[in-house]
Length: 235
Image (cartoon, rainbow, N blue to C red):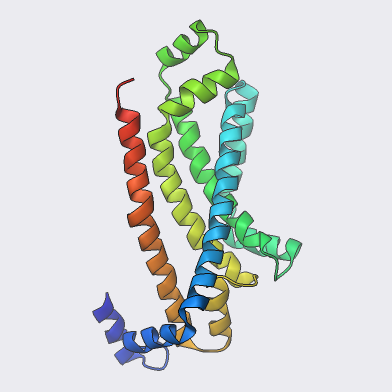
């Protein structure tokens, strides 16, 4: 990848900075600036993911209440999957303002929600009928059936969906920061783009790529594996 980057730099030196030049520019930004904007982006992404995941779980409970509720949740999920992230970003920026921290959070939530909800609905549709019969025999109401029987059986699928949803939320929250925000990786990329400074664009793009790789490989992958192992343990 580095070799390809350098080859493109040789072909288009005015548009694409070299690897060493990008790293040097990033070093000039300073560790504190990098850390502050990275943490800000991570915090917004995490907040959006939690909102999206919590909403998906609530809609999953609604889904179990009957045929009308099922059709309503399915229709809502279809709408959420159909609307472009660009549309969400622009609408939220118009609603809350260019410097508001809310749009990146809500965009991350709206990206994570359909991913989590789709996995949840798929799992509920394929739930073991014997598990439901057992819960009913034990006197569980719909809430307990959902919380104590169905959700634990869906943990492996939800862990995989959560990993995908968090990664997507991180990528998209950066887009929302670029459209309108007062800090974060996306804001820095958009700032240097407006200043016609390609080194800044590539430098902060490199920060984003590094962050995504570290988050996925060192945190989310191991967390998903631990959840799958826990779910596979005999009860």
